[in-house]
Image: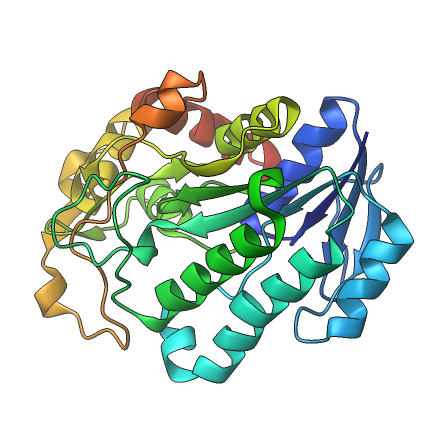
Length: 299
């Protein structure tokens, strides 16, 4: 089966491409400029989500049976400062891709917990979205576009606080904390922001199962609810370093361009009921540490 993964050079996209290849799929992936190393058996295509002709051209060239759309403009503060770009990439680009993909069998759109305002947390799929920033709004518009164009031939997968390591992937709180802790440096983490940190390697495997089973609708696939401070503490424990390196700070002490939700944790009971579940946080963190050492050349 032929699958197209957009954003193949990204934190999640790299693992999606690798996971689908390991499962025997004919994998095509997109990059904006330079293709990454470590995925030599993947066919690469350049894609510009701000160019509708580029989008149509890739779909016509690849003729995929499945599309997994993980490419996005994910810089939260950047989206707030450049709303026009966020609108073009996350909404118009997603809409154009969905329209171009009307002939595919199944389409997965990777969305975010930031479609919620974070007032109460543990949001379910049926809760009404209310984004706290423009990034969340632009991703919500992408959800609406996918569902309106493709209906039950699509799945919107909402994730939360992606972390992990891939050779060309985006820096994230998890990798920043891990590297600092390994160097014996202090890690400052919010004690008053809760989320459902989601480990990309295991998330990619869960998305592959969704594709294989063609599960439609909206699905929350994420880790367990913790604060960023608790996440960093548990990472320190897994690494066997001094927990005292982790220092709690308040969101109120840091000036951020875009407002962040206080508690954007996701209720994943619907996914669990369907057999789509990530391992416990400690298992994810252990694998994260091992994978980082292996892929970064530490071993």
